[in-house]
Length: 512
Length: 71
Image 1: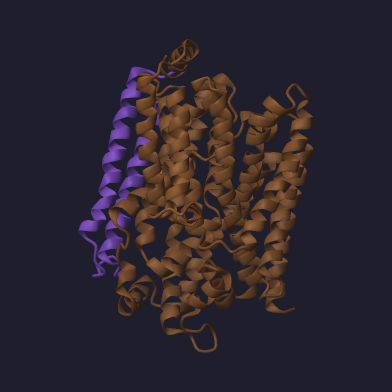
Image 2: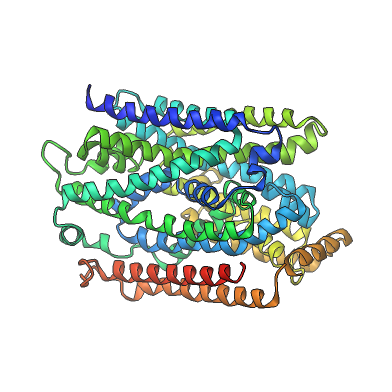
């Protein structure tokens, strides 16, 4: 058996495992939206923790973190240690309040919650549609990651675009079989697999390339490219990255609904602590692989990897995201490589499944069920959810075939969009004084989301914007415009009586 | 049900989080590739690692206190 066949066999075994879990969870699935999406709000600490952590960490964590370490060095650690722990703290503080409100008022999606609080159906549709659009960017990067894993894991025998399609189909299939229940169950397997995998990769690659351990690796990097050991972003970029990847990401629908899954607040809070440790420590081994890759890239290893291999990968795949997969495939035994690349696939699939599930949830629950065919049996809505998963799969896959660039940059667009929910959400979970009403919420959120699209480099070019920025900065600009407009419009208009009544009810739920 | 004691400790923790996370930006004051005694990491990396450990300890400590008295 050739090396690539061994690697692919292990990835195949992994795929069979998740499909089996999807099938089993589907057998006990009740045909109701609440069970299909939020496990009937009965998940314990382990499932809530691993579902949140595995969903948060995606192809981004396994692939692009190594690519960013290899090209910008420890900058990634400085920012990511702050945003990953910040995300978990946000889950602890804001998530518990969202959970309490969700249980009391029956919310199962962000649009549900915000439309209920602001008493605005316009806001419901707006949040549902805008979030579904931003989420496409996230689905695309998982598709990119899956394509890279199979292409490299198969030694080029299964090309990027078909590899991506095959693994996306596997994900969609187990989602169709078991709904988000399957995603939660598979997240447990995937969460453990990808965590063990990334530490194993870090240790084994370090042993191979710097037998003297971390001090030797640091000295190699210091000699070849010392700037990789310093912070290379300015404070504004760091602030933007922390904001979009902490509250911004935690407000995207696929993570927001995790707050509704836990059986009680204690389970959610304990999960948040586990999430902080899991998410942040994950980036320690990826730093080792990324910095080792930078060393190999600078000097080359004759007959193994050429000097400048990162540039070669960038021209082939449109970004440097393949570095991790190449390091694993090149330096480790095929059995280990198969295990680790399956871990990489787990990272991507565990996020993709939640995205497919929540995007279809948003559109079915907040648009189809309310405006297209209201009052139909729940089984019809579940069936439509399943069809929508395939539609989103195809859209994501199509954009992935265009090789859209570095996963880090594409992801940032989606999370910068998520950040625009922050002012509306803070008003909802801290109902002390009514500062934002439905008019302010609708206009502020719309303006913030448009600003993100206009000022982000990748999207701004379509609007011929003279000045564009990284999505992290665009997210901050959007947030500032959003907040100012929401407050000004709310000050200039009056909240309806219905809104005021709900505001008092929320106050009671949270403060009495 | 949220008691006023719970609310004030939550408010204190939120304030603490803002202060600690602001300290993460202190990395710009020690931004250099010079090695430190900690595994010859750069001073940038060392500062950030120590910040991370402290931030995690504060979070875990608060959570332990909060959960022990009923969450």
